[in-house]
Structures are given as structure tokens and as C-alpha cells.
Image (tube, rainbow, N blue to C red):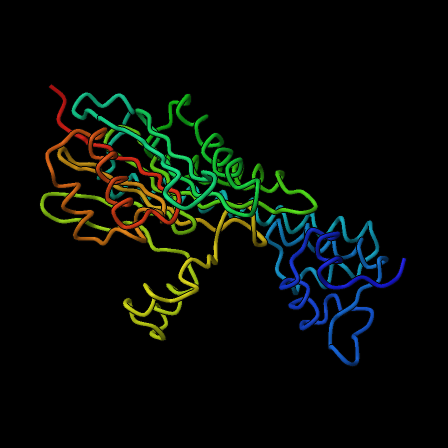
Amino acid sequence: MGLLTIGAFARAARLTPKALRLYDQVGLLPPAAVDPESGYRLYDPEQLPPARLIAQLRRIGMPLAEIRTVCGLEPAAAAEAITAYWQQVTADTAARAQLATFLVDHLSKGGTTMSHANPTLAIRYAAGCDIGAVRDSNEDTAYAGERLLAVADGMGGPGGAAASKAAIDALKALELTDVPAADLLTMLAGAVTDADRTVRALATDDHQPATTLTALLRSGSQIALVHIGDTRAYLLRGDELFLLTQDHTWVQTQVDQGKLDRDQAAAHPQRALLVRALGVGQQVEADLALRTVLPGDRYLLCSDGLSAVVDRPALQSALSTPADPEHTVQRLIELAHTQGAPDNVACVVADFSAAA
């Protein structure tokens, strides 16, 4: 077999061309040859084993500098180095989990752990998905239950729908577990890691599906929020609508760095380009937050098929209308259609009230 192009080699190694270019730049995996006319990188098939090892080490979060050291070791020594690295990761994770538990307990004034069966709050909820007016298939998934609310927007070819469904299915197991409020974030973070692993397993030689995910997991009056991608979570409290998430998109990074204003970002041709999603990248990096629910709160979770075409005042108006969640979901989907519905639309609406 002759030399492989960077695209063919990337597919065989389950890497991306972008990752291979980075590994070349840092001297970790230089190509076997570079075409003198085109500048294209060419790889030897014998480079596949080290490339796959690098990919696997990146998936467990190992920094490139440590990977370079491991790749230079004999197999037995490399195994010992990986073991030592993972033991350190495990210790760090345990310490962070203990700190998170302490902070939750401290901020709740040291109260006892709250059960999800809090009699002071009742919840009503609805979920809806719509294919939109342009797309041939629906890759969005929406789910609403007593304890879990979630939306996911799949992408990456034919596996997008399966990816969004798999991500939410991975979280549904948490509904069957009595999760104390202090453990919400830890449990949700672990479930997201499982979801990322499941989505990656859907990859084929031709397609690497991926999905966004925004979800709320409830225990009593406490809810944990997890977010990755450009699906969104909003809170209507009183007369104000709050955006609880930040889009993980390239244009949002430009806004954060002051290189684009919000109007420029909204019209930018790369506004849908994600920098984070489940199923892609070296490791999952999700935003996590813990919030307290108040009676009268209304939460909206939605895909960008809604938020990208319906402006915030219209969202606030629809959410402020005294209608039940089912009718509100339908109203939001109708609003997307009035704007042409160029994408799939998924949304979840949940109302919290004082129990009778």
C-alpha cells in the first residue's frame, strides 16, 4: 500500500485532518512526506498504530506533552505511565467532587440533603419536535419528564438523529435513581461522559455523528444544568427572560474576544459552526451549573431551530402568555414556521408551581 492522503489517513486513524496538522506542528506525528507542489501531507500506513494510540490518549484527556513522552517509551513503561496519569486524574476528580459537594452544602446553609419528593413544588411539562419547512429529516430530540428535561440537536450525516437520541437516552437512567441534591452535578457529569462515549461508538468509516445537548436534572427544588453546543436553556422568572447557557460556537468566541458584535455574529455565515459537541473533539467539555427553582418559574430548552430564527422579545412574549406547556410548545413551533423554519425545531417547556 502506498502513502495515504491526510484525509484517508485521518479516516483510518479515527482522527481529524485538523488534529493531524496540529500533531505535525508540535512534532508529535509528522507526515511521511509532503508533496512538493501541492504541500499536501502524506502518511505511511505504518504510522496508523501510533496515530491511533495518540487518539486514544487524547480521549482520556492526556496533554500533548505527556503523550510525546509516552509514545517514546517501551510498551511496559508506557503502560506504567498511563496508569500513573489515570490515577492522578481519578484523584483530582474525586477531590473536585468532594469540593462540589461541600460547596452545595455550604451554600444551602448546611441543610440536609433534599429529596426529589419535595412536596412544595409541582411541575407541568411538555416537549415537541418539528421537522421544519426545509429539512428532509429530523435530527432533533426533545424529552420531558418529572425529573429530566432535555433537548439535543444531532448532526454529521445519517447518524445525527441516532446521536441526539442516544445522548438523551444516556441521561434517562438518572430518572430511575434517587439522586440527592448534593450529587446532582457529579451524577450528571458522569452521564454526559457516558453519552459522549455512546455517540462516538456510532461512528462509521464515512460518518462521525455528533450532537449538542442541554438538559436539566431535578432533585426537589434543586436543578443541575448541563450544556454543550448551541442548544439553549432559558428561564422566565417574573417579567424577565434569562438565557442560562452560552453557545459553544465559533462566532460566540469571536464575540467574547471583542472581534464581532452580536449583530455581526447573528448574520455571520459561520454562526452555526460549533466548537464543542458530544462525539467530536478530544474529550467532552460540558458546562455544568446548579440552580434553585422557585414557584412560578418557567423553563425553556430549545434547539437553534427555534432560537436562531425567533428573536428574544418574541420568545419572551410567547413564554409570558398564560398558556399551559403543551400549548406554549406548539406556539413556539408556529413562531419558527412564521420565520421559514429552515431547521428542525425542538423545545421543552416546564412550569414549576407551589403544590396544592
